[in-house]
Length: 214
Image 1 (tube, rainbow, N blue to C red):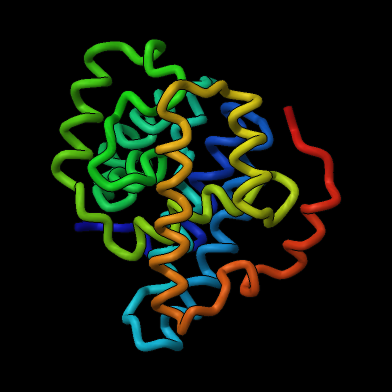
Image 2: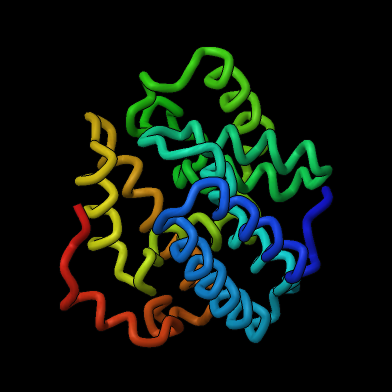
């Protein structure tokens, strides 16, 4: 499965997308990549063979579908998948989708504003998730980091999830969706000798005192 390994190329794509649709998603993407790199480096210290550049670039481009515009739904995940797949990077394309679904084998309708997603997109998203139901470490770390970083920097899960819920809406199954992030956090912490993920992210404590975006 092919991924982008060149950071300069990944940055070029991000800059292009930002010019198409400027917004806070740009700084969020950079911070997700930074958090991903820090966690992957810790996993490497504990013996896990991971490519730091692969992880960083995949995290940097996880929301690349935003180049088409703003949406409260997972349409950006579909758009990102199609764009990265067209470039020939299936690994990056899959992460554009999986980062939106933290629970393995979860009901795809748990996603906020699922009703806004056209039927043809729903069908392909289901197929992508069905074919990639076992998340590897890259998928797990990037999915978690999507909830550990906002446009301002690193943040705790509770604050990030509430902020997204206030801005994008929630549904009956949102609590199950949120639970997935904590399950990934617990699994990753078990792999780094039970060290808190938060301890790897500089100045994360500052997020406690910052206002929640809504």
